[in-house]
Image 1 (cartoon, helix red, strand yellow):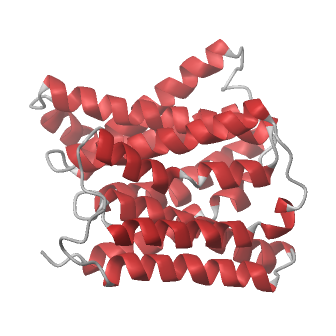
Image 2 (tube, one colour):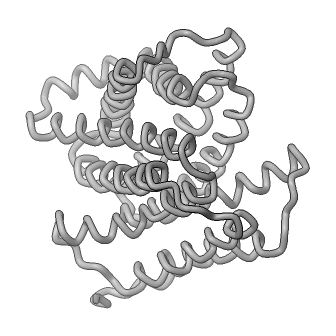
Length: 292
């Protein structure tokens, strides 16, 4: 099957999720409220277009497939929670470095849990991309300090999104993208709602202006971002999809420069080029049988 079009979808997905921090800047609500409503608005928007298909296909799903789909959404919700907690308890630089370890965990968990082979080029492309990520936030690296709680949550966020992608890649072979996405997003919202009860946060208490922020987050980085990644999981290596997510800080940095006149330095440009090279290396130079 020709998978070229899915590389284009990944590119659109990267562009879309890179707008997430830009849109979030306009929100006044706490992070957990933002994350929960982002998923709620997404589910609401999807319902008229997918509910009939989801109900029809969902009735025929085995318990195992349905359970894995719910598990995937559960880990997506946990990822949002861990990422939010990390940003609240450690520096943005620390959180960014540690959560961007998810391609490493995809390789490790894929090998341990799913007995997948680890090809040498995946390892090399991961190291190149992580180096690029470090260069993008180089200025913040000089002021790094340890914040155990936040740093741990960032690592957990990386693990959670790795599990989300690995599980999704497997069940997408048997479930259509609309059904998989709807169930996963609904479960992610339920997970965040339960966490809001745990932390005594009312996710429905927010200023009216934030409704437009939640709508923007639902449409652009979620429906046009994560949903395209989910679509691609059936045809592309989950490690490649995870690696491509590292393209988010490249575009986010460019958006911040264009929209908010934030500083754009040479090392950030070099970091972006390294991430792009890592993706090209992963996609264009794979060789069968090259394993560790």
